[in-house]
Each structure stands twice: as C-alpha cells, then as structure tokens.
Length: 408
Image (cartoon, rainbow, N blue to C red):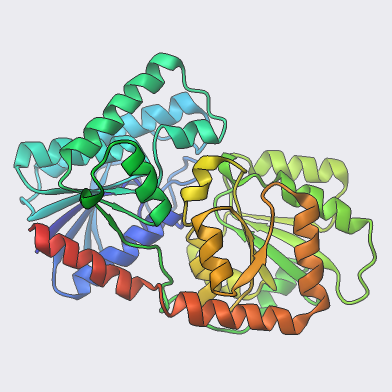
C-alpha cells in the first residue's frame, strides 16, 4: 500500500505522538509499504528548531519512511494563542504539501492536535481516499482539563470541528477502551472505532542494567532514583513531586537517599525548577531536554518510574506510553493516573497504586519500594512479562496494518 500519515510531531522529537507514529511507520515501511509522513521541523517543546534542521519545506528519508517537513509558525509548548497559530499554520502547509504528493491508498491523521486531524479530513475529501483519524487526545476537552483557557466562541468552534472530523472519517483508531467509551458518548458509532493500544518498542526499551556513567554525571550514583520521564506540561501535575520531596526530606532513610529526577522539558519545567530552588529541595533534579537516544538508559537507570497526570475525569480515559517504556526495562511503575491505565498496571502486578496529586500517597509508594527490594524486582518482572511482551510495537503495527488493508 501507499500510506500517507499527517502527524504534527515526528522523530527526532521524543514525545509520545512522535514515538508512536515513527514506530508504526518504520515497521510498515520495513514490511514493504510506501509510507510518507507530513510533519514539521522538529522543535518540541521549546519551539526552537533542532540542530541540523531549518523551518523550511524539506524532504528526508528516515529508516525507510519518507518525511515531508513543512514550514510552520513556530511556538513553544505553552501559551494558547501562539500554539493555535502553530496548529493552524501546520494545517495549511501540510494540506498544501500533501496535495502535491502521489495519491495514497489510505490516509491517517493523528491527534493531538485537532487541526492535524482536520488536514486529513480535507485531504481525503479532495483526493477521495479513505481516512483514518487517530485519537490520542479528545479535543477541546483535553485543553480545558489542563487549565488552558479557551474563550466560549472558540471552544464552540473547536467542538464543531471535532464533531465534523469524527463524522467524515471512515474509521477512528484510539489507544484504549476509555477513549472508545468517551467517543461513543459523543455520538460516534461503536462499530466505527478500533482500538490499537500503545505498546513497548522492544528493540529500544528492553531489559538492561543501570547506566552508571549517566547516574554519576547527574550525581545520582548510590541513590534511590524515582524518575518522571517525558514532557513537563500542564497536564502532568508535577507539583506533587516537589511536595513529596519536601516530605521525604524531613525523614531519615537509612537504606538509601531518595532523589526525584524530572527528565525532559516543557511549559512547566522552568516554573517547577524555580519553585524547587525556592524551597531548597536538593532531592529533586531537573535534567532539561535530553537526547531521545538516552531515554531508554534513563528509564532503565531508575529504581522506579512515575506515571502521573492531574486528577480529572477526562484523564481516566488515557493510556500513557510511559507505562510501556518502564515495563520494557523491567522497572516498577508508580501509577498516579486513575482509570483504564491504572487497571492495566494493577492487573499486571506491575506497579503501586498512587492517588493522583497526593504527595503523601507518592511518599508511601516510594517508601515501600525502598524498604523492599524484592517487591521492586517482582513488580518489574511482572511489568515485563504481563505488559511489555503482550503490548508491543510489533503487534501494534500488525493490528493497525490489518485495519488499513481492509479499508484500502
């Protein structure tokens, strides 16, 4: 098949959408399909284009995937107005560029963000090809859930765009049962929705030992490391880490000193780091944005990996990719997200249940793991066997491909 994929994010960006899309597309290309991704110059989360790239129209091939990069209005991952300009400029540039490419057998458009999905709607309509819309965030609800203020008329307009997008695609693919239920509530026929879970890329996130040099570089050797790895955005609610660090700092741990490590960058990183310095929290380390290639080493070098989102009903539907990365490296998960994702982790015996936004609950989880190394090892092993080996990128790509073949 010839597959065209609209994605606002793509490798070498390391956020969850870029990682999922690149993992799928590379496997489809390896299987002999002609795959093209229409995306931007890599710039997440700072809005600054990565070294080696420019914000211009350019083509490259990455691991067999043709990548068409378009010029957009650049914006950091914060501030509603400038980000909206970024999204709309992608819609216009991506649609114009795609119309000049060879006609595909099927087109996919993925969220976040909604204008990326709508580029797929208009392209499929103009070129008369079947469209799959992939839902990883339900817009505009997800923006409201993280505290982003959207004026009433704009919110109404975005809802109209959202409903039109659902109506005009041939198939909706989402990442978990929670999303399916929410989409059905919005009037989408259940038979129109398919689930293709997130999964572990076992070629990248496999069992390995700690990277002692990496730990030494950040002064973490010999310490019990609890890591949050990913975009430090509004949805993450990482104030809870500072509160937990403050509580732990008041206690004596004879076994090991506990350090929280926040690996990555985003709209809230500077604010959190300033607050940590204000409180004098020496047991919280911010690494800033790290190369994507080092992410497996960070996951594997952590004694536990934190998965956390703010406490809101909408986030009970999500399925964070961090679960699968931690599972691949045989690391226990501190699960601070309610709903379907927590059920997956708890049923697998892969982690500890943390109440979202509760510093005391986070402290209790950490103390259990520090005091019981056998528990940590058991949770990590369960994560690998019951999550990573069951939900992985290879099976995910195969399931997704069968959907595309039926449509094409």
